[in-house]
Length: 200
Image (tube, rainbow, N blue to C red; front, side, top):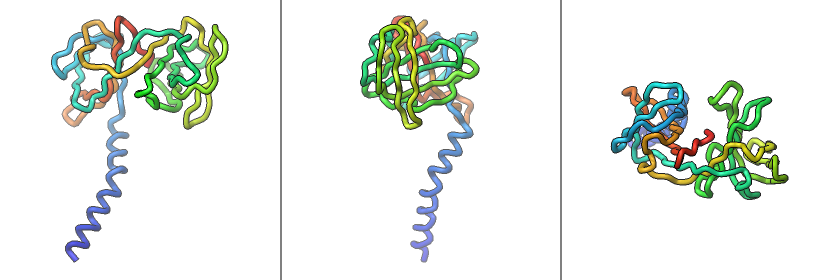
């Protein structure tokens, strides 16, 4: 009987774990912080948000490092995986082309916090036509979306990076959550090389 109860408890905990994890994630949403690197010491990153002040974020063995290199719209290929940052009635704010290892990053269409009404749409290029603008149609689990991208649309290419790239002045986007002690823990850090500014 005791063994049966233990087994039932273990099964109940296993069933509840995803729900509990989802509740914790919902109570502690991911923040996206944008700015430049002020300094880095081991696993501590001090950044200066574009709005001023400083923020300290902490890295851990699970923190994913990505690098953003300057690119151009014509680098988009028919098989590319992209994210497009846009807002209604405005030109596209920026495009990110992802390396094969990062395909699937933020797939879908979701509100983004760069400005009121902004959205990030990420997916696989299924059609590509024209030169200026380049017309692309992206596919993701939510369906297809078409964009007209002018030749001067800010564009970067993102791939795996390393902490050594976190040098003073580099542009960064930090995806982070606050832990129970009030510390900001970085889930993902995207750092621009040679002044490139990630469109995220």
